[in-house]
Length: 415
Image 1: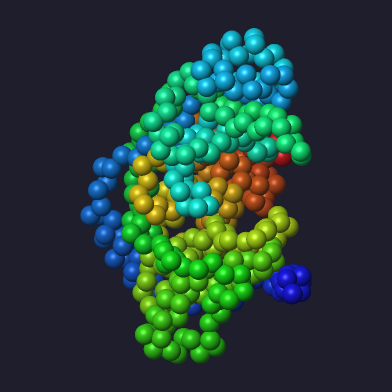
Image 2: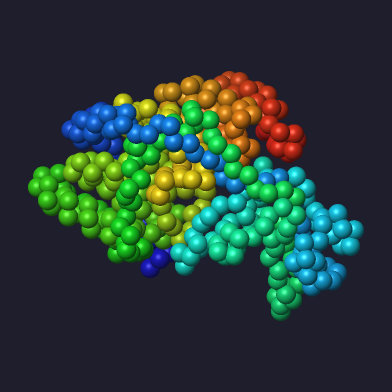
């Protein structure tokens, strides 16, 4: 049954790859009447923004320049004890010469939730190229009290029938730091929070995740239904999140656009914008998702630009990674944001701002590197080869202004 379902998905996508969703005479996936309703809501939101606290300061994620150590031979049990005793890095290297040691690595510390929705701390190596960074998850309560400078965090695995004994660790030569963002960046975050509305989520807290039974489609006559019926349909969709069975299962994105349509018709802007941003960021649950299916999933940035939204501030506001975010703050996907920016009428403005962030010595290292990733993702999707080469030269020069431990390890691809 599952294989048949996915085959149908392949056929469906292949037939609709030129246009993912129905478009109207205005060239958008929302008709003129819906756009008019949304425009009036945007006007009121701009008035609301003027009353927001524009002096609020946001802080970067906690970060430190540390080391990654891996050991899979020798007396690993003793190495674990030495890490527990906070052996110095120099003495550890002398005692365990077979250990793999990677110095000057940018390590990010963030609070998250595991699959059981328990609070954890994630220590993550920021990979500067195509490989995946090393990460370690720890219990939040224990890690929150853990001293950092001169200490170790590790994952230890004893010998098993299918694997050898080994240990992987982070060493922190200094304490993690979080620095305030410049007011111009904080205002962009405030603008995004004001428009998106952090007081609510798209799905209800107790919503079910369903692969086949979630409400996805709308009845053919849905636009002629009274408002209370549309409200009921939206409420039902918010109660059941569609989970894709495979890369070509289109149902999560269909549900997303239909939630956007219903929320626009019923003046639920907070649901509309989250739904549309989820489509832009392709933020949907899937059992598996292969890269070959990504190209057909469009971003629909034009729909936002037609609403007189300050799209550069909105998208850059959800790009920043911050430590003191509002509950339900929306984080954009760097790759998808880059693709959306490549299609924006304000692409040149976007790229100018992003280059300045890469070069900004007052901005934290993590967000500067993410700005680099955002730029190269945009450039990847830029259609003009001449413009690509021009942008590539610009970002190559900008990377040189990053701290040396970062710039030396970033390889800008020649276009």
